[in-house]
Image 1 (cartoon, rainbow, N blue to C red):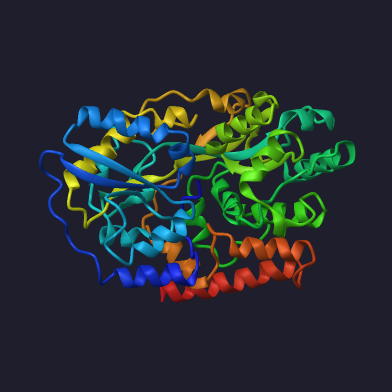
Image 2 (spheres, rainbow, N blue to C red; image 1 turned 30 degrees about the vertical axis):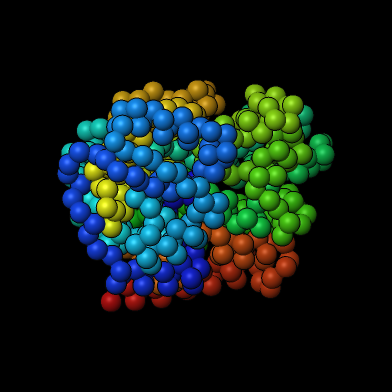
Length: 430
């Protein structure tokens, strides 16, 4: 899911600051894997349905001297970020989005040279720092928009929207011709709003982040940032989203969209199998779950940013690093986790999963964003500006302004964001 550097909350930021004094080596990664390791995961659903038990049994069959304990955490981002202020954050864990690239060596064991690992893995740029790799992706995501095909068809929409205006027009048809909520923001849970930022690269520009970091006013017409946030604003302002966003619930939203009570949501491809399962559970047709690219074309082609989802890392303080490293290697290369998730494999040369057949049919072009020359510049700017690009707070405010629950309008809010960004950019570069 959301996978970037965010200003989550004051407690999270404090945790990372405190952690700077608490880390230390816990032994070598070399040696025979043995002992007990604790693996932290946000996939509590896979613990509940025993999927993780199958993974640990398969691993322990190969490594009989290792015992794996899996700890599921619902509020993963918040709790694990806080635990980074101690040494107690498991032996293996998914790297929280709040950890910036320059903080990776502080918390995690180096896993090898990024250049060498690229022979095996895709999607390595996010968790690489100064040529060393600190996390390996469990799978890859394409970014786009989940939708209920049946509802869109009942509204009379027969082709994918190619522009933001066409997207808004289609949502208005859904509102007028069906009983479905045209768009579901998941405002209350918040984190799904970060999926809008995950779309960056939808214009086909692999240097979109570097371009943003040179721009004093990213919220200006013609930029991806403006296009993305203006579209969300219009969806809400035009009354095309849920009437009371303060009562939304992520788990419930799966059933709403799967059964056609809601029609559309911006998300990553990781969500496809979850919503298909929700359709099965509700007695609806999983084939109703579709996935479309952002409504934007360059040279007549749709584009979608693809990248790694959760990256597994070894706690730099682990007492059983060889066992922890063995789990990371096995889970990312040998387990069926990526296939079970219907996701892009992190391994070089892998085929596209069947879940992305809609993208294949629409000839969507995949974009992997180029690695930044300064990997911390983007996060330095948005943290200084206090604009959580990959979080929820500034987009919740955008939604509030759009629905009339906060003062201002899109023009005034974007002007404020541009000023905050410009001031931060000048400060970071000075």
